[in-house]
Image (cartoon, rainbow, N blue to C red):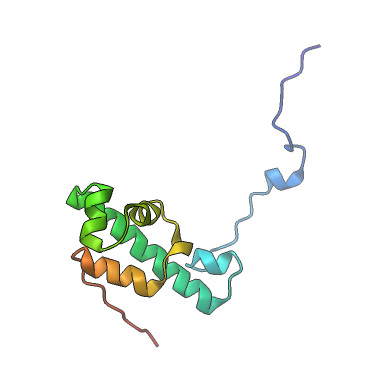
Length: 109
């Protein structure tokens, strides 16, 4: 008798759980980071996404981007790859301004 192969673990009821937990709107909070730290991480990720789009729009090579931004080419590479841990929010805002973006901070009460 031939059996149909199954994915490993599909006998586990967790694989068939259809329930959903709503997100908070901040993936870093959902991952368990403290709220204040999670907000900074979210802002850093958002700036990095904008920077990646901006660098693509300019058509600069990584070496050209490095010259315009005043950093090394490997640093540009880490920025494009989204290695958020390598950049402070302050540095990301500085790089955004150097790339011709106009970063603004808005605090909501």
